[in-house]
Image (tube, rainbow, N blue to C red):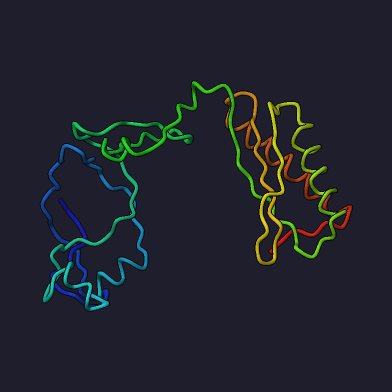
Amino acid sequence: MRAIVRDTYGPPDVLELGEADKPELTDDGVLVRVRAASINAADWYALMGTPYVARMQMGLRKPKSNILGVDFAGTVEAVGLRSTRVRSLNGELVAIPNKTVGNAAIVNISRRPFIKTVLTVSLDSSLPAAKVKRALAILEESYRGHAMTRDVNVSFNQFVVHNLNVLVLHWWKGTDYAAYLAGLQQMNVAVKERFDEEGIKLGS
């Protein structure tokens, strides 16, 4: 297969378009035909072979792997025997090794009767107690007042250096994700408008 490869550490000049062996599919792996890739800071360090102590793992004199990159998007061509397929909210089919699935909490969105949201609203710590109480009331009214709200809990639960944190637990009736996002935005904007009207300052 074609790939951008390198045989030594160094600047981007060491990269070239070449041939590489097709990866073998492992039982807990996924084989993906890459359509797009991106680079990040880790790729740069791996390209340059820095910091030098990292070469204990990457290869002392030359890189163990001649292909860089871990961030990519593409088409799944094969899935290992010990992998599970999960469809994401945007419709993508994601394959996850079973050893990862076994340690994860997975919710079947299509079967749940509601969508739960956990929000932290930070208030400025200089607010007087009366304003804090008013903010709690506004949050309760704004989120509970929406027609699609199943339930809501509002609790002033944390003092942080410059903030007073309020925990909001909201349950949305139904599982239409687009409608949920639109409704959540509507409620959040309503809260901000009422905070502005009453001079309630959000935290940093």
